[in-house]
Length: 306
Image (tube, rainbow, N blue to C red):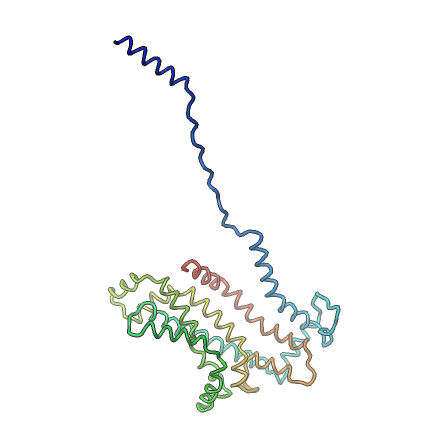
């Protein structure tokens, strides 16, 4: 029995050694998808960038020429040498009152931006983190007001400003814009996603009041969104022409209103008009240079949270 068992074991081992081995399954190659944008994305962004910069460059071309430049058929794409002279014509024009209108625009835009950020953050914190009756219905009403055209409120708003005696003053431009429905909606969405409830509860356990919790916890968390809201509000207020043109007069205008006076003559020199447009755009470029990082941080933070 022992010899027979040994022979069987040898035969089994020999057959196992000579039998072909089963092929091992090949490891699948993982398809690595690159996160870097492709050529089409860069091309699409380049087209959008060129389309956004072309009107400004066109204004620079006309603003650096003379009164006949806009009528030339073979217009040179290289800026001329008359921009400084045209800019000085705008600045020294007594009817335009450039420096006073520039100061008025700075005051109005700064005050409106600060008030919109403050009140929108307060309202956004209340809608996102506080519990009270009618919260949902009130938020829907605030959002619905964005669908109402601004032109519908011009007549009653002008009557109200006239009754207050504010026509011709900067208060008539500042007060109606102290808070915006878009700002409330934007800060509500951001604070609801970016601010954990545990931080608010921890602050209340430590004995912080509601205002203290908002100032020390909610406001720092909402800083990127508040910075982006402030930048957009500043730009919209700076370029606003419709309401200031109605409620202000020529002795106390904002910058867009005063530049419109350049077209009030019988003969309009568009080289001077577009030179004034470039001058009005320079402060916005300076603002983007100093606050561009906050703008990008606010956009990226909102994209990540979304």
